[in-house]
Image 1 (cartoon, helix red, strand yellow):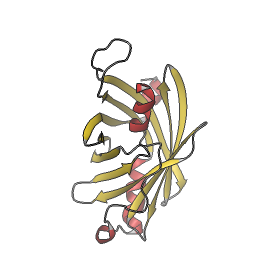
Image 2: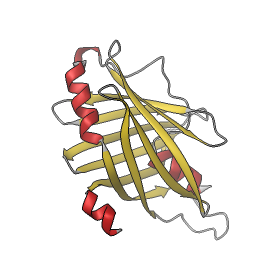
Image 3: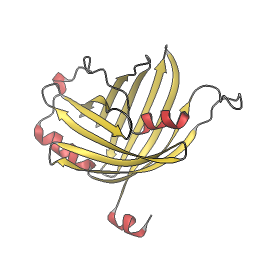
Image 4: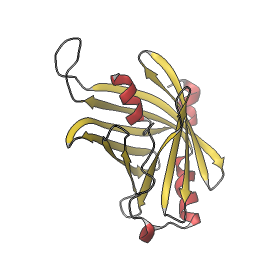
Length: 194
């Protein structure tokens, strides 16, 4: 169970976003050129390394759950050049490699990015994100069907580094946190198997 929840957070949510109430972004709408530049900067292969922490008690031991180290590779490529990207990544869930496909596009009318994700045997899910030009940060909010509320932050540090953080609360209580660093792989690193 903890691995399934980890995937929801690591790859961004699997559940449907509250598309009726996106964060107010109208005043922060981006130009087509700005959107294309953001997408182009993401193209490549990224090593994602971090830690997640489900709050609660392990049902097998009765002890508090401990943080879990995580690592994966994500390849981002154009879906439609200048307009959308496709992300391919595989995550371990209960010891099994599970492939995912993520699609990201910009809704110019609403001034938001839409992230959709699919994996075999599950319905498509998604998240709506706003982008802050000053801090170079994507902010996402999601309401899960069980009433949990998730907030995420994905900050562009430079061309080769991104920081991701999120937290999930249910009934006002923190139930999950995650932090990860995304580092771009160069072609030489990929060829060397590093």
